[in-house]
Amino acid sequence: MEIAIVTGASSGLGREYAKLLDEEGLDEIWLVARRQPPLEELAGELTTKSCIYALDLTDRASFLVLQQALSDSQASVRYLIHAAGFGKMGAAATIPAGVQESMIDLNDRAAVSLVQSVLPHCHTGSHLVQICSCAAFLPIPELAVYAATKAFLLRYSRALAAELAPQGILVSAVCPYWVKDTEFITTASQTDKGRLFRHFPLAGTKEAIARRSFQAIKKGRVVITPDGVSTLLRFLSGWIPQDILLHGSRWFR
Image (cartoon, rainbow, N blue to C red; front, top):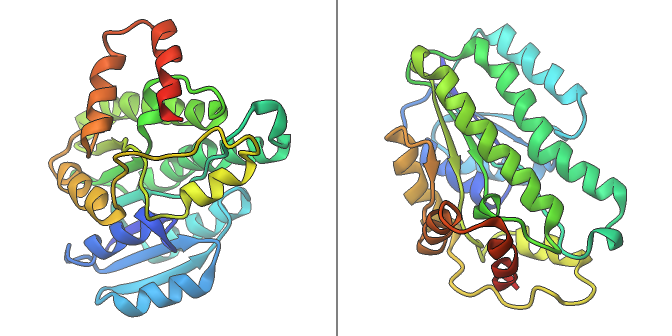
């Protein structure tokens, strides 16, 4: 039995990837997120059999549930798409420590734990996908922890891609610019008391970002920048010193 696992499937990019995976001829799609009602609604829209896991991936016990399910089903994982994640805007001193720690837990620790859980069930042609951000390419004041978590995720994915290549297991990091029609901006803005981030020019749509990036995922691309801004930032970050990038990162605001 071949399956796909999508985290953050209740909304945003995760939901869009689940719809795209519905066309891949899989036996099952496992939908993972904290909120069960949106997962049930999505499952009703898919033609592929869906399994719902209403789990909080900042809770380590959630991975025991997934590991047991994988073991019991003896499933083969063709796709893991880790789209769960969140960010918070504002000065680091103004964002509660617990919130910043949860950001690290979900964006990074959960990503590593998921990979460790599914690797024994992967095979040649399996895809491990981390939904990253072009924030990974440069330090961003007032978005410091979020950008740092994505930098970790990008470097982890690139190293993992090289490590697993001999086994034929593909790893991708998707690094989009702002996506305007997801919950991310609304959630991230809740801590931006100084209104430091006011505009989001050239932001993409979740449908377009998911569709373009999924095409690149299937081609085995390691670092995927599915829009013009993220592609430009990726290029510039390879040539411009970090001090200059740090100053230029204020363009995000």
